Length: 344
Ligand SMILES: [Zn+2]
Image 1 (cartoon, rainbow, N blue to C red):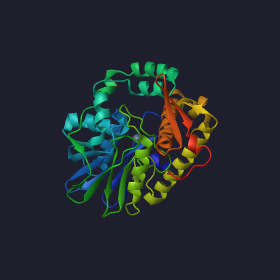
Image 2: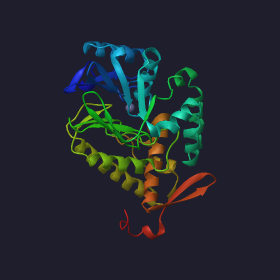
Image 3: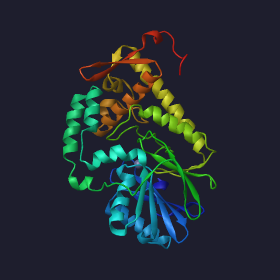
Image 4: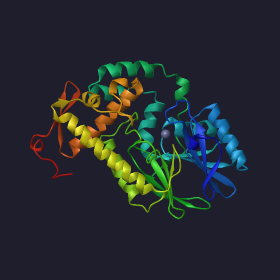
């Protein structure tokens, strides 16, 4: 795929897309965007703290006539490893300042405190104790050296206009993919540095983080509408190619989740179900694979995605919940089983 080729690609005057390698094959590469800003650079996202990523970034900056010491600041869209950790590693050597969305604070605090129970408690609530057991074993095998890549940023970002030397970036909190995800809008140049909020080819996972909020999909849909209220912008995503219309992709993502909500409601309609039981009735990935064919990581993601959709359906009054021995069981709301749609 063309967009995974290494190099430096000017995607707007003074803005460069730099794809960096990732160790897992699913996403292929992460895009770092270098913004030419006077005598230095501002980088949006940093990549994963890997030798191969660091070497690729160094050579890309070299192409632009710069080194790591010229990076004035990292603006990071969210705390996931592929976006945040190389910034932390480079700050140790170059003192580069890092800014991250304020909403990432609770999840980052849990990671830094080595608390590894977040998904495990969620999986119990979602009715998947055996997945929780397998996940516990995986999490226990994560070495402290991998967690060492996480430290607090220098600056917590809230909604504001950031004045760089040559342009103004609007920081827009877009909770959903993670609760502290932010995008950066350059209104004058019609650019959306979208992180993982709006991706051209895939739908980002929702709420896969140590401190999961109450309604991550509800937050995500609100954040999509927030971006939709801006003028149509060139989409600069963290994974995949640059495309011309933020509106077109946001509309597709909103439609996708409405389809998914309808399918999730249909899966519960035959009776009651936990998030895990409901996830097993749905198709997964663009190839519509069976839940049982997914690996452990993707089964955990799929169960969490299903819970996120079920909770939005509860919020819309279409489903009800009941706690049974610590497990959430969903059922079609009595008044709604005949006709839905008044409330939305
Ligand atoms: Zn990512």
